[in-house]
Length: 286
Image 1 (cartoon, one colour):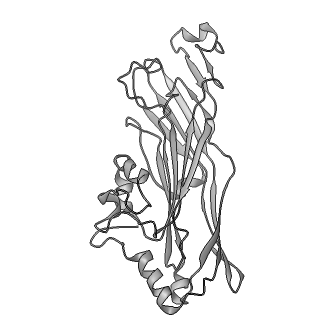
Image 2 (cartoon, helix red, strand yellow):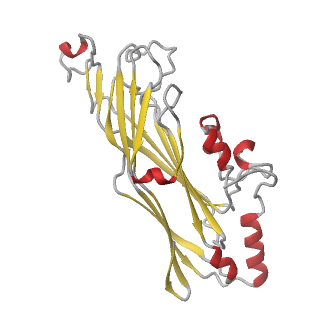
Image 3 (cartoon, helix red, strand yellow):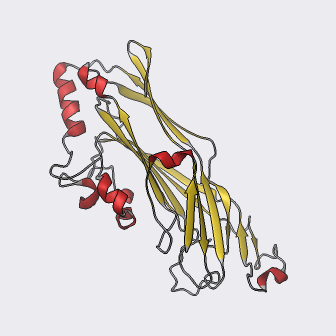
């Protein structure tokens, strides 16, 4: 929504709700064999990768912010400050006999044009590289999720953020570090490692912070997690064992403090065209 602070100032904010994803993996399976998800963030979930797939438990959320009134009123607002607020810096949860070496990736994209949501709703795991290379001019886009017009340009990427998380085995309980009793490594369901919540490794941001004109902002949150997914080719010690994990992804609020840039009519029309000119034709989008 957009809040009027004064005649030249707006506060535009959007929210992604909390989502908890739990996975279970049978012994000798390199991927989760069952998955459940819940939380108030399910209302904006576009897709969750189901069990018996690589990256099961990964998900994408989508929020469309209606700013049609800005076009009707010829309004334009330039973000001067972006604020990303979370109820937790990392997802809460645990990971038993899981993949403790691959990192988890989380993306936030605030775009002035949509991606092809029909493709993302059907199967988005094959387009991970597209998300990793989206939002800067000159980077490679994936045709299927961005349409014939190509991937969103930097001008159309108002804001983007990537966060990387990993498990620190020094903070967990494992057979190798002596925090688990050797008896836990025997029996019908042996335990080799127990991890708590991951740690935040890095945060990077990009985007144009270009003027917002409406009629919509298209907002995506993408989480790529491998906490119970293994390559299965390196003899990982946890693959033969039963595994389970749960990640409680916190709510995220994105806010832009915006000012009127006092554009001329020509500058306004140019910005409006730059924001929207890559909407794909002839195919379903948001």
